[in-house]
Every structure is written in structure tokens, then in C-alpha cells.
Length: 108
Image 1 (spheres, rainbow, N blue to C red):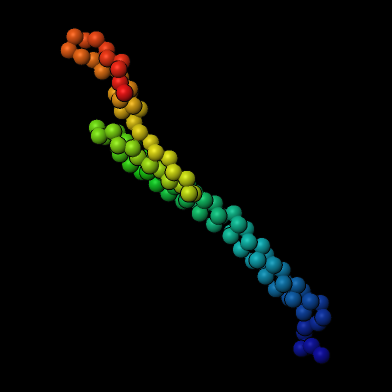
Image 2 (cartoon, rainbow, N blue to C red; image 1 turned 180 degrees about the vertical axis):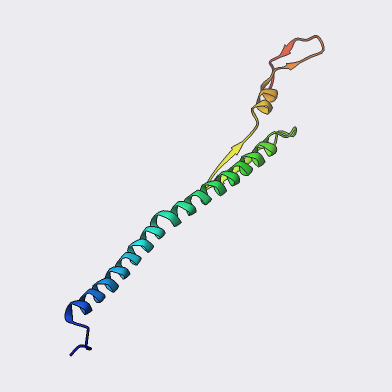
């Protein structure tokens, strides 16, 4: 039934070794995918997102900080918000001063 020199125990041990080796390789591959790959991917996304959000904030500040007092809108998920620089609001809400230095509260 078996080649001469190979008995049933030897064939069983070789089979057990091959099946165990395949099992360990699958477990190692699963660990590599779940932990190492996802950790590297998550780290890369966090760095990329941080740089992108910094650029977005910088653009908003530059647009809102101009001397023309224009509004800047932000739109996300169907919602829109208009932003304006607080200094522009303070300038617009400050009472007008005439030549004598008296405040004119008759704004309309």
C-alpha cells in the first residue's frame, strides 16, 4: 500500500505538517492584513487629512480676512453657512462720527 520505508505514521506526520503550515500562513496573513496594513493606512489617512484640513482653514482665513468684507460660505452635506470677519462687523456696527467727534446714532 505504501512505498517501502514509509509507514502510516510517517504519512500522517507529513500531512499534519503541511496542514499546520498552511494554517499558520493563513493566520499570519490575516494578522498582517488586519493590524499592520490597516494601521499604516490609518496613519497615512490621518496625516493626509491633517494637511488637507490645514490648507482648507488657511484658504478660509485668507478669503475672510480681506479688506472688502465679503462673506465666505462653507457648504457640507447640503447645509450652507456664510462666514464674515468679526472686524468687518465691528466696523459696520460702529457709530458714525461727524467732524465734531460726536457719534451719530441715527443710522437707518
